Length: 318
Image 1 (cartoon, rainbow, N blue to C red):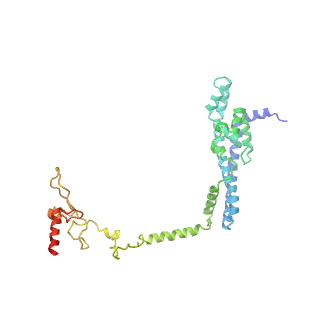
Image 2 (cartoon, rainbow, N blue to C red):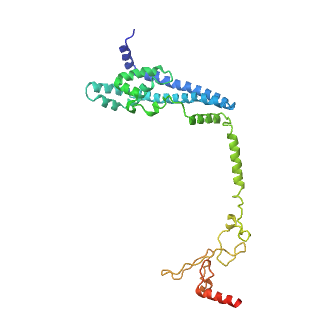
Image 3 (tube, helix red, strand yellow):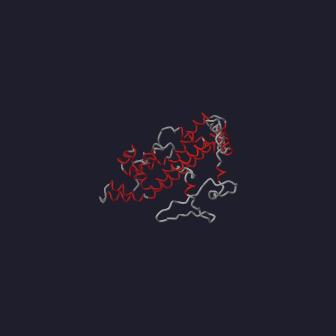
């Protein structure tokens, strides 16, 4: 029977060989194999969707999700293994400093920066769905190097010593329905399967609505009826108003009608007693006679003299 202590010595002496030559290649090969199987399973899911066997596809797609999560976890563990391989020499320096009393054990652990990698492998090795025997060997070596107290804390994830991205991927909870739906839609899109069945109908309906919106300029609204039973004047369309710059009030435009907009000069001020407004054609707006402006300008209230003259005119007619 082989002595366990002798095996541990062998593991410590051949740390580089076990991690670099066995563990990392094994993780990479496992990822390639699981990815190839996942692609084959996706083709089967596409056939099930094409045959309208949605219930069976929803159940079996969980295996694809589980395989993808396992592949992602192995990628993370591979990175941690490479980190351990690159900094393996720091472990020997740490152990030497601890034995000589130069640093404490906790300070030595923090100095290496390998606690996260070691805790992740110790936590994930017995829980990994994929059988990677070399991962168990490296786990035993890390327990020996970091101590049983550290291994217990990593095993139970005390103080969140294990990264969230590791322990979440090892959760035993089933995938959410939103994730299952997203996987099925992506598989259907990849393999050109019309799924869900009503997607084509929705696309056609949306296209019809878009065509109607493009052909309709807003729709003819029902005109309100006035009190006397007549119809209000039609409102000009926006395109009829885009006639370019309007001429001054009183001048004819290109359509032969007078401009509906009048340009009045600003009122005199102490800094500008005689204000003027320059027109695009080079002319200027002339101030109108005050008599013609009284009651003639749109919105200007009539004076008392204007009202008196109107009453006298009405009395003569009566």
